[in-house]
Amino acid sequence: MKGIFRITHGNVSIIMASHMINEINGINQMGVMDWLEAENILEKCSSPHRKTLLHNFIENVYYFDIEYILDKHFPMSVINDLAEILDFYNVDYSSLGTFNLFDKTDEDINSEDLEEAEDYAWRMFKLYEYKLMPIVVDDIFSILYSNKVFLNEFNKQISSSIIDMTMDEYPDIFKKDGVISRCSYIPQWLKQGVFHRDKGRCQICGTDLTKVLNLDNKENYDHIIPLENGGTNDPTNFQLTCESCNKSKGARSNKYNNISSRFWDLENYEMFKG
Ligand SMILES: [Zn+2]
Image (cartoon, rainbow, N blue to C red; front, side):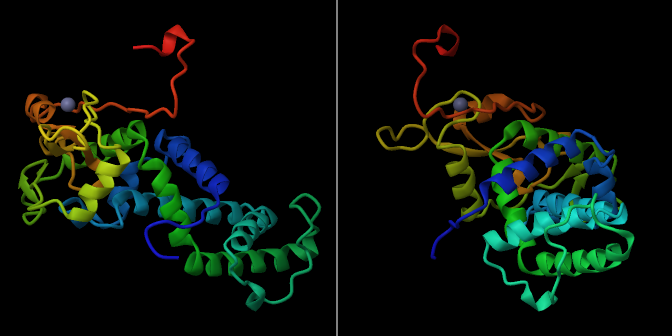
């Protein structure tokens, strides 16, 4: 299959994306700040990378989760979940050897079988991590990348770490204390991605910037959280705006809208009008 599309297990991606939303809202006290400091990924804040900070965050939460479940001795739930995903993507895991406990749950597994199940779960996870995790992480990313409420919260949490960092510590990345330098250019792949995600509409006023019929509107790629407020040059921090909204937004405004493009109009309902 050529091009930037693939067949994806929609349910798994949506369930995991919703899990990431809970994590970012602090359900397990695993906010972005701890993660940003634990991993040395500041360099990613200075220019856009295709593997974004959000990919790293998803990977980190995912890994942490599976380790946590295995540490709590629930191998069967890991095995059953991973087997479903591996089967869906046609990844062969016969190299892991025979395993006769597939039909069991964690409740009905006895202490003798536990060791075998745990051993198998770890091996399966390693295979999954190597063969499939980057794809599943990217599928989860694709869902979250369309959600501005999530992206805004994600970048707001990152910015609260950035604003406390000093130029002395990171002279290559910062313009002044707490403010990252603007990236020298926005790559074409990112412009294209943001333009398509935002369906060619200014994310502040909704103006159509597709130029299908009108050529008078110019597109701008705006930092959702401005650099002056601790924002980064990560792809997750860009949105499409028209020139006039971009100019009037001001260097310190965090303005964004989560614009939803509907498939048809529910014209019978007053509340949907306008
Ligand atoms: Zn606008």
